[in-house]
Image (tube, rainbow, N blue to C red; front, side):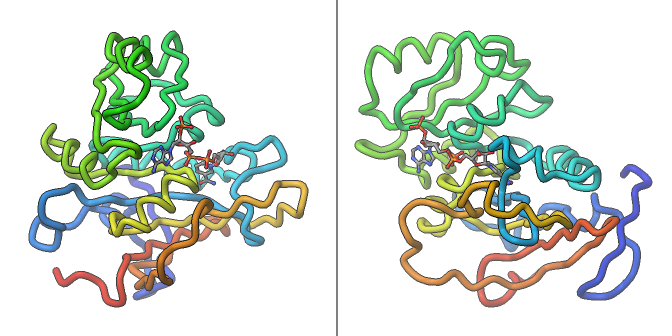
Length: 243
Ligand SMILES: NC(=O)c1ccc[n+]([C@@H]2O[C@H](COP(=O)([O-])OP(=O)(O)OC[C@H]3O[C@@H](n4cnc5c(N)ncnc54)[C@H](OP(=O)(O)O)[C@@H]3O)[C@@H](O)[C@H]2O)c1
């Protein structure tokens, strides 16, 4: 609770408390054996996910920064791809951060690894470079899942084993596409910033990498508006889970 009220446009018009609107669902509607996975991304009206500086902050609004904080407050772990952590300069947070990387090309002296309040989790494949594995193990909680590629389902099960049941995936587009392709995303929160970025912002959209095996149907959970920034909560699937 923060006292912040946001205008809800759908399903029913009115004012809502974002903490209530984004409460994680009850146990009864959750997938078995893995956490609930919420992904959160921002794009401009023309679909850009960064400003010309290659970072998402360049398109962010005050309302989005506030909502970003609400979503972190509600989650118990942040899941992020190494590309985003590198580009956005991820720093330690109140929440544990789980970083997905195949190459283990990490700056082990960075605050995210060397100075995190909660030891950062590094999710990689069991047959990753052994020297890098050993070095990473010294500063992080390494979760080795799969061989040849990171087994994301195994990684999520490992997060559940550690007591993390409310995951917030902050991207980026490669990790989000892999999770969606594997059927491991339960909801997608997309903020639309009221701006056009134009072609200077680069071609990336909220999903990159290999195509999805099939179109993924979504069901609108809610649509909120705060000073022109739209917050859509999409539930993955043709109908919302009951309850
Ligand atoms: N607008 C937004 O909301 C938003 C959100 C997040 C990011 N972004 C932007 O997106 C850009 C970064 O894009 P990105 O595609 O590099 O982001 P990403 O998905 O965070 O990172 C890609 C990297 O993460 C690791 N990774 C991702 N999926 C993996 C998988 N299935 N298995 C193993 N490793 C995996 C790999 O790291 P290794 O190379 O270490 O193996 C891969 O190179 C930046 O410009 C950032 O600002 C925008």
